[in-house]
Length: 62
Image (cartoon, rainbow, N blue to C red; front, side, top):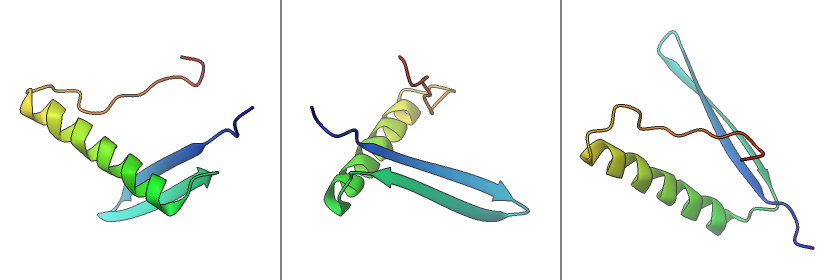
């Protein structure tokens, strides 16, 4: 059985300050950079398509 891989980033903006929390499990540095590139590409693609909801969310079981 493969090990579960998790990479989660949370941005909190308070009083103009950006706080970042990163949680990773069984993810190496190259995978993390690749996942960030994928997320960036998805956001930019949604902006180009004029979508109002550029961020997607899902429940763990979906």
